[in-house]
Each structure stands twice: as C-alpha cells, then as structure tokens.
Image 1: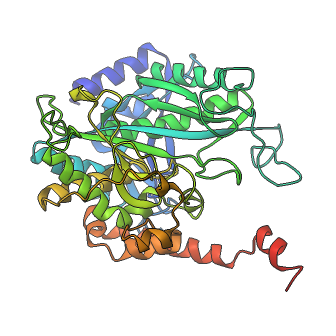
Image 2 (image 1 turned 120 degrees about the vertical axis):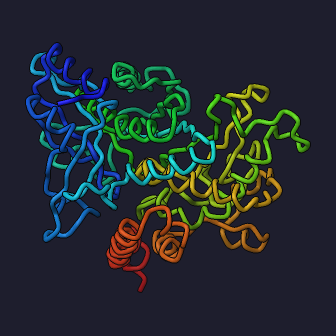
Length: 460
C-alpha cells in the first residue's frame, strides 16, 4: 500500500513514540470539535479508504436515514497531544469528511474554506491570517456539574483574579496557565507571538503568529482545545463565550488578514499610497468588500444570541460598518505598529468573536474581500471620530453610517437572503444555519430573564 511522505512520517512516528490512539478531529457546522479514536493498525487503511462514522448525530451533517460518513485524515496535521501520557500516547489529525461515494461532504466546514483558498490561489492570492482570541478563566470546584463556580448573588461565574490590561502582579494569577498553554501550543508546532492579561477580570489573550488561512483555522481549533485542557489541569475552567459577565468586557477574535502572492510579497502594501495609508488599490477594494458584505456574514462571525451582547455602543467592540486607521471603534482598523514594514501591512476585522467556526469565518471574509477586488469597489472615507464609540445605532443611521445587526434575529434574516453566503457556504450549510439560528432566536425570545422580572414584575 503506497503512502505519501507525510503519511510515512505518521506511521513511523506512531511506532517510535508509542502512540496507541490517533484521534480523528473534525468539527460540526457550528464549529464544535468532534472526534473519534483509531488504533495504529488501522491508519494505513484510513489514509487510503478513510474511516466510516455515523454523522447522524453531528449538528449540520445529515439525517438519520443518510448518516454514513467517511473521515479521511490529513497526515500533514499529525501531532502528538502533549497533555496526554507519554506512554500509550495519543495523537491527532484533522480530517476531510466525505460521502460513501467519495464526494467531499457539503457539510464539511474545513472543505468550505479549502474551496475558497483554492479560488484565491487561482487568482494568485494567498490569504494570511493572524487572529487575536480572548477568553476568560473561572473558578472551578470539583463536582460542579457546570464546570465553574457561580456567585450566589448574581448567578455569574467567578473569575480567578481581578486584574486588568497587561497586569503582571499578584492580581494576574493566570500567568502560569498562559505559560503552560503557550508551551503546549509551541510543542504542537503552533507559534505564539505574545500573550497578556486582558481588560476583564481573569480575561486573557494569546495571539498566534500569522499563517495561511487553512493552517490557521486548524490552529484556532487546537488553541481552544489546549486552553481548556490546560485550565482543567490547573483546576480552573476556561470559556470562549463572547460575553460571560454583564459588567466586564466581552471576548473578541479580531482577525488580522492580508493577501500575499506566491513569491511572498504583501499585495496590501503600497508605500506610495497617495492617501498616506500605505495601502494598495487591491487592499482598498478588499476592505470595501468586507464593509459591503459585513452585515451578510455577521451570522458567521457572531453566531449566537450572546454574541450581540458584546456588539453594543460604548465599548471597543464595533457597531458601525466603517473603517479607520486609528479608531478602535470601527469595524475595520489598519494597524500601524510598523508602518514601513511590508510584512506588517494588514487589515484588522474587529467584530468576530471566538465562538465562531474559524473555517467558515475565514471563508466568508475571504469571499467578501475577493468580491470587493473583482467588483473594484470604491472604499468609503475613513471615520476617525472618537465619538463613534458612544453612538447608538439610531444615531449612526442619522449620520448615514450602516450598523451591524442588533441581534441574532436580525443577523439570521440578513444572512438568509444573502446570495454571496449561499454561494460560498453551499445550500446545505446555509440552509442548516438559517433553520438552526432562527430556532435559537425564537427560543431565546420566549425566555423571561431575571432583568425583566426585576424591572417589570413589581410595577406592572
């Protein structure tokens, strides 16, 4: 049975490193990790013919009557899991999901991004991505079913420290957790640029070094798994919920992105830009595409009811569909840390949050940017007005500035009518998300919160 160099490396490493289980990783349409374990003797067969599994219980995959799926492991993604024992070790590989007939499955998120990356490559573009994922640590007590302690007075989870931005004192008790997380990521071949305490109590940020879009999406899935595993080892609980605390900042996933050519040139960089932004015409068309389609892809980048508790006026999360060089309250910012360095020229999209499926998120962003290039969309003027932070959606509308959807209900209806989203995601994923998110919104609307009882029950 012939094997590729990558596959041969996997088979040899499994033997030499005492690997007894290889986990096949993939995600459902909502971006939740799924896995099953394969024993080493099955790997050669899996590389050639895949491993069958029941997809009927995976959200967004298929009905019970058409549930047979086949997972084909990608040998290049093989890594031994550092948090598992060295003896009888455990490894993982990401998979492509196919039908029994050998066709790439329409519900495979990774394949969606792969198609968009290939489409960009046909035009000579390589998308590089560098996300900034924020998350919280919470106190965890043994035997707590939810995995975290809650404050009896508020019902909210209890942070493990009360530090703020860049704190490095006794307040930042998560330093060891971040350190062990970074060491684990680097052990798995995922380079980290830097980390720090974020603005909320026990809120963290670890930034991965940029990579091509498909590699980075795999890295984001691994990153989230590592953060949670290391937290559990330390007896704590980690969450990527966009807005877990009412009175603290939400967690975002700002996505820095750029297009390079095959020779490693940054196609976004132009030191002769007459406007002084050092942005090429191609970059400006790309930004214009992101702005034009932001409302349509918001369901992908901000996929939950809770996501829209973060996207409110008055904090650094954006509400307006606008761009600027220095204004952190706009949807898109042009980072200027190293303005004369070609490699550093990039666009930062600030609305995504870490609950998003990274494969679909990078795919729709790339699709929107490419549309902007294809249609040669003109970029609107930047908005550097600091008062934008406090502007309500109504005030933005009066100024002629579009705003992101107000809630999940609005987002799903805009997404439902988007021809671009149907084209990029395919009818299977698009239709599933419309149905699932409408159901989620309708269920939420029926829920009566403690805020409503507190404000209305005594007086009505």
